[in-house]
Length: 549
Ligand code: NAP
Image 1 (cartoon, rainbow, N blue to C red):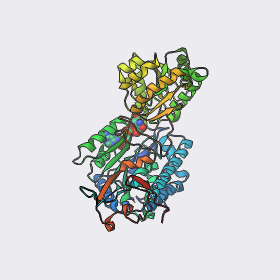
Image 2 (tube, rainbow, N blue to C red):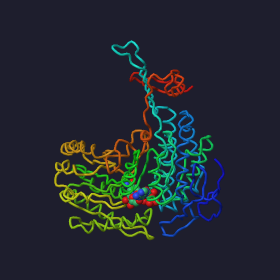
Image 3 (cartoon, rainbow, N blue to C red):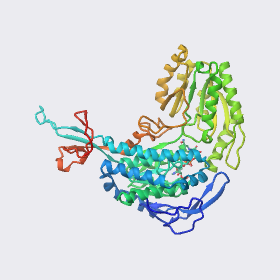
Image 4 (spheres, protein in one colour):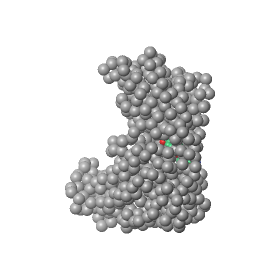
């Protein structure tokens, strides 16, 4: 990795080349539209060197370079692409503690969490490298010509996937490493062969810039054109919308608020050439506790696990359990009382930004103001200006069904317990529930009533959520091949995909079919001699490619 002098404590003053800031086509640039400074959410104080904000000319330079880099980038062999992704991961590791130090100060998240997040970030890059190396993502298919078929001969048809083109990624505030500059969306797009332009989140500019340098170094070390990667800073309403409107951009990945996601979807849909936006927005991740699960020690144990999941990381997870459905039984009462005691004893932790903490306070206040809602517990305020008290509310199933606004996300450690009279009432009541990232069932499978209720609920939950859990809590998303982190609107803008796990790269690929193309003109993935030794579907059946040459 090339030598840089990153300044995690933020005391550096220097030129664009050695100060953290935006990268246009992998090259450090001075911002053309002013600067911003990082804010420590634990104190509310600004710190560190000013980070440049890009102007319109720099945005266009980045998208132009991305368009120009596309053909060279997508010409890489699976092995070369895999090497590049592993290099990005190695370069992030090489940043050492400076990266975690900076992320802790900018996000207020605990060091242990961010150390784990760094491992997840590099782990998912290496997972994509393995997937790309196998070549299966190219999805090569061959239907050889049938010249003797009657009444018409069949042409030779060969299909492979190509990258959609330059992708704009909006870094998420709540995962400054694993879902930001070189996080899941960037890794998936690069794995697909798409140049990436990251709109860095202004809540963690130094963290973003350090990671951006690591990616840019990997681009250079791999002999790729600089346009494969850019990192830009600015206000979303300005540069974010300009990027999405830019005709050279062919897809968008976003994690954040519903308002932000919807605004970008509108911009993308109104372009002369509309493009897909893969936006992950809001989800309350309902948990259904059936009566049998609360028997005996169940009520106490589940209440403890629930509050731990609710308050983890100040509740700033897209998979936070915002709604828990609990029966109106004495066992259900014990669950609510235990959960209320735990929330009352909990202390607020610093949230990511002052606006996010303010939105949380407003959301809890709005809930509290509703006559149908009982505020069962409020914890203590934490230290500093942005550590609001956790909250637990209670509402009846009938009231929730009558006004679906009661199920809107309050981002942070605020949960609502929904009391239901009879598990048989749940499936019909859920028809009005919005799309979710997750839905969770707790039931005693040895109890015939629970089993019947769970069977009746499952088809509804499958239609509502991208991931259906049994017996656990939704916070914590494994990065694997069988993971779905997606779901129907508004959990995401397109429920057909996932933003976590190896399937995520398919969002950025497009199939192309070649008819009667001479072998010499076919891409390597489809040539007769199979130079990349890909597993290919021939007449619909997988034919192993053998060991790499
Ligand atoms: P956000 O306000 O939606 O911002 C996310 C990114 O999108 C930022 O880079 C932002 O740029 C940009 N952006 C926002 N609105 C835009 C618009 N109208 N046009 C173009 N770009 C736009 O999300 P956030 O800052 O992370 O947090 C705010 C709220 O989002 C939270 O309180 C929470 O409700 C929600 N959130 C949800 C999740 C989840 O996983 N469900 C995760 C994070 C946040 P600027 O900052 O420069 O404007």
